Amino acid sequence: MRLVLISIACSWAFLYLDSVYQRRRAEALFADLRALDFATAGFPEIRDIVIRYGGHGIQRELLPRFPAFGGCTPRDCTFRLWIMSRLPRIPVLNSTEEEFFYAALPFIGVRSWVVVAQFEVRNGKLDRSQTAVSELRMERIDSSGHQYLVPLGYEVQTQRDAASFNLGCTSSQDYGVYVSHGYPKLPAYMLTTCVLQSAGISTKRAFDVHLRCLNGLFRGCTFDELAPSAWADHSAKDDGTGT
Image 1 (cartoon, one colour):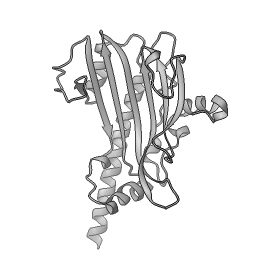
Image 2 (cartoon, helix red, strand yellow):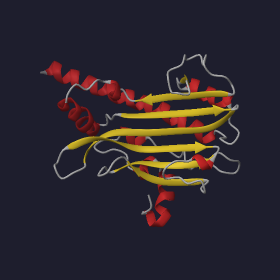
Image 3 (cartoon, one colour):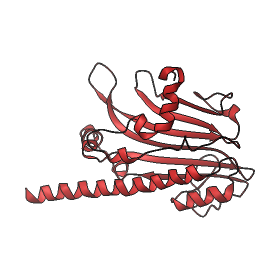
Image 4 (cartoon, helix red, strand yellow):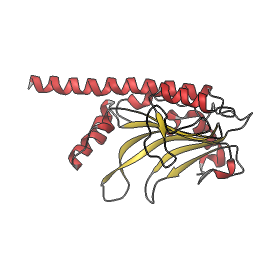
């Protein structure tokens, strides 16, 4: 029994410390994005950030490319990077394991979260980007009492052309925040900020992201903890009822 308890404690410590380490890498990424001038950013700036966090270039169709960016040119390249906790990498074989990984472990600070960032460089300039932090949680979404895995989190979309914003952001906005829903009956699952990449439009509020709650005990992040500036802007819109 003692060996079993020691094994459980060591496994928890490994998963928790790895999550803290990855969270600090993600915090450094968001700090770099707050400092980035999206209006003038081009291939060199984006390439340097992606290399720093272990990302790589990909094909336009999102097929993997070689890490050395062999398929990219300074005028036309798509980059992607991932930072994640160890938990999403562990294969889940059945519903019992799923319940344990995504319902029990979060109460002791071990959560399944991931940060994904994608940057598209066109004609030598950053054309658009999407950066998201999300966590898989077990949520009850109907009266049956069944729990389902639901992604909840925050994302930032930036684009050089506002007319091509999708869904909750409109072509008339330089900056907008909305809450999106995955499917009917699912809870609000993603807070999204859209920012036009233009001189004079600050991206710092959009990338004001606090990740410490990803390692908190007993409960996950809420929108106001994860992205306080964006949530304040959303709450100020239509008394916080707009989506």
